[in-house]
Image (cartoon, rainbow, N blue to C red; front, top):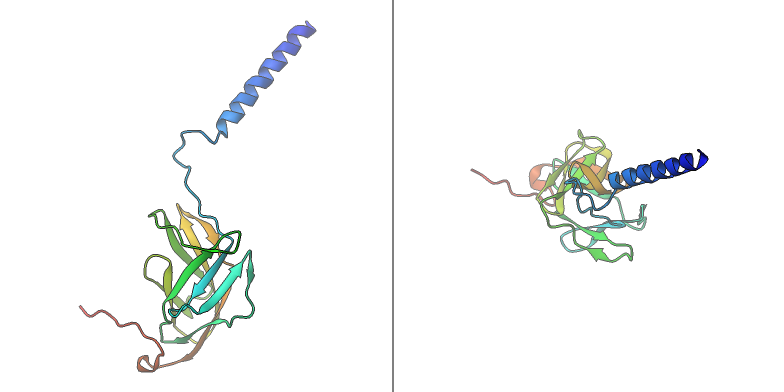
Length: 171
């Protein structure tokens, strides 16, 4: 009788192990498996390729000034390059499944104008300080994100006084 119990327990154990292994199998035919974009850091550049912001493994480069934009003005174009585990720059994903996302701490102070791809403009609305988190969006979640980036929205300027202002398309 004990032999039958031992064999039964072994068979049950094997069956349960096989069941749970199959459920978590990486080779399953589930359509929810997607290529994730993993990075260790982010570099943000002004149009002249001057470094505007850099973060690697969660630590921002404190030698760089905070990002600034005037209220009522648009910043110059900011381009993003990503950093791999060796701190080497890599381009962002070029497929349709990944896109730039963001969270603005106070949307009454700052807006983001995305131009597609891995670049954007800051749009100052009202004087003050806020934060910005950039993300690599992928199928409803973020594959990667920056820590909070401090943004200073400086004094309000008239449009013709803005150091950089994107021309509005007139229809």
